[in-house]
Amino acid sequence: MLPPLQFEPLFKRYLWGGRRLATVLGKPIGDETAAESWELVDHGDDQSVVAGGPFEGWTLRRLVEEKNEELFGRHAPQKQFPLLFKYLGAELTLSVQVHPNDAQGAQLDPPDLGKTEAWVVLAADPGSKIYAGLKPGVDREALRAAIEAGQSDQCLHAFEPQPGDCVFIRAGTVHALGEGIVIAEIQQASNTTFRLFDWNRVDKDGQPRPLHIEQSLAVSDYERGPVEPQTPRAVADGVERLVECDKFVLDRLTLGSPRAVADDDCFKLLSVISGEADLFCGGQQSRLGLGATVLLPARREAAELLPRNAAILLEMRLP
Image 1 (cartoon, one colour):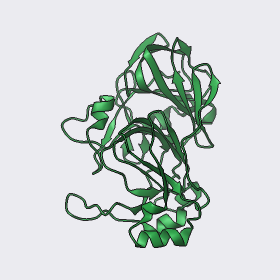
Image 2 (cartoon, rainbow, N blue to C red; image 1 turned 90 degrees about the vertical axis):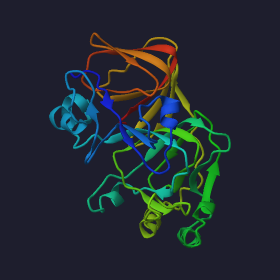
Image 3 (tube, rainbow, N blue to C red; image 1 turned 90 degrees about the horizontal axis):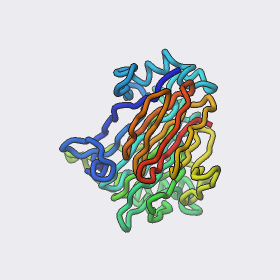
């Protein structure tokens, strides 16, 4: 049996970041700006580290290596933790980008997983946009011509998101997150991104970030078409299924009363996106504030969630 595990966040300070992770989620980013808070990651040198408890200081990779069956249950064995969970706060629009699928990622040097992901919008300024999927009729040559003209964004479907929207970005979907938006993102444990267009920006040294035009054209899914927010599906009282695919399952839990966490020999990744909750597991009580993330291993004591302030959580697991 393993206890619930919480981890130190890893902050990524990219040029499009700002203060929204602090102002919206209360993340301790210090006096600097931050673009992303990686809540759970096992990808090369990027390693989540356990905060507190009997496994304090352990990396997620060490847990995978030494506690594989307890961590993964019916999904064991796993060579790495297969999912990566993060929060993003966009002060500026992100680059137009696309991610490879598993087969394409395996051909990279070094090899990587593909990157299918899903976003849940937590906050969005009026007029903010999400770009997701190609407009109807855009093929490889049309996209190439738009890239060469510096107008690839004109090939993209766009919409104004609302808090609560969930956007499913399959590998191969051309996309960009617009400015003024905070999201929670669950994805495969990959960090391979190909940029088609970066809005003609330069970095702090006055240099444009590199683009990956040929790689982008090769992995883009020209059949994907426009992507709209998901339609949530009720699967139980207070539980909405946002995404169910071969890479992960994403549910949204609205807690109005105590709720037992299913004991189905599968890890659960929980994160609070509104309000607060208490987690009881094996005689241990954990207070989960806004933005807190906890990993419940597959082999654990019975767990129960109690809401504070009408808590809303995301629950993520393998299929």
